[in-house]
Length: 125
Ligand code: HEC
Image (cartoon, rainbow, N blue to C red; front, side, top):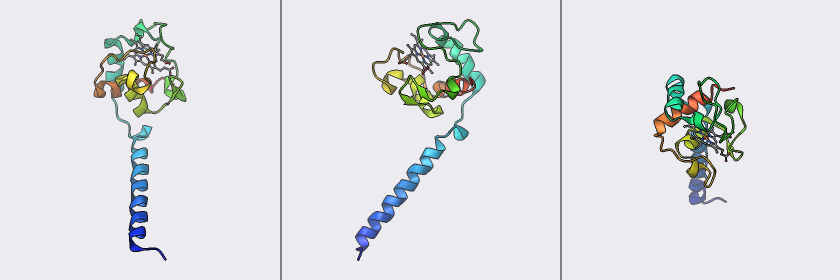
């Protein structure tokens, strides 16, 4: 027979699991907010095009990093990180935290800017 403590424990674990799932959903593309036009301006401002070939950004034809054609539908970021808008924003904000030692430098982009840039990158399909 289950003790009431065990019951309580199971109930709270279930509640935690449910909360975790809801959080996961909130991170999905449908709930991601970012300003696409501002994002495109920021891509110019931070000169991502010095290292990347980026469709829709004049003069962005760098070849230090991979081209960002269709990055919005790519499965992985940098070959390791599951591509989601939140992970993309984290990557742009601090690629060295996201994947220590990779070749993209942390530029020091504020989170709000990183989210708008991610929104723009997600238009590249
Ligand atoms: C100094 C060069 C440099 C600059 C500037 C730079 N990146 Fe990168 N970026 C890289 C390199 C190198 C990689 C490859 C990292 C890896 O795969 O390990 C990369 C990877 C990426 C990726 C993942 C690409 C893929 O195919 O998985 C994205 C997205 C990205 N950069 C976006 C940006 C954005 C947006 C900016 C401007 C805010 C920017 N980068 C600025 C060098 C740069």
